[in-house]
Amino acid sequence: MKPEHGPRARTRKLMVTTASRLMQSGLTPSVSEVAEAAEVSRATAYRYFPNQAALVHAVVDEALGPILKWKGKTQDAEQRILDLFDKALPRISEFEATFKAALRLSLEQWAQDGTPGVELYTVLKDIWQLSDTQSSQVAKWAACALVRSAIADAVNEGRTPTGI
Image (cartoon, rainbow, N blue to C red; front, top):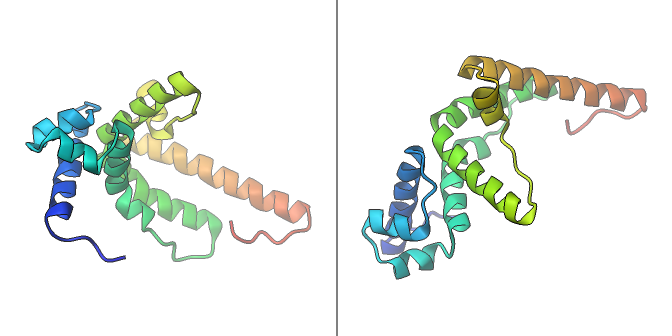
């Protein structure tokens, strides 16, 4: 899909960039607050983002971009997990405040309607007080343990562990 160009694309980009800046400062802005900060009308802002969740989703998609586009280069499941974490965790650390704002909104929605959501990285850093390096090591260890367990289960059941 070709990227959009023109005034609509620039306005959308301005809204996402402004929302990201506000989220990086620790806020979870409403569409109206982003409109005011971006100096666009509220009506225009709501044409692009009908609600706060849609706006936050766009900001998170932007922050996750390189992670979502990542393609592994090996067939070894454990190494693929480690490579993915090496790509993802620095980006998550860079946009930590944005992801926390999204998590905060997710938890607020969960409290209202029961939709679950928890962020491993936030738990490791904020609750267990681990450093970025320690959080990365724990996350990688847990992911590799899950991969090893899935492979062992497949082998024990006589299946070929494909697609892991």
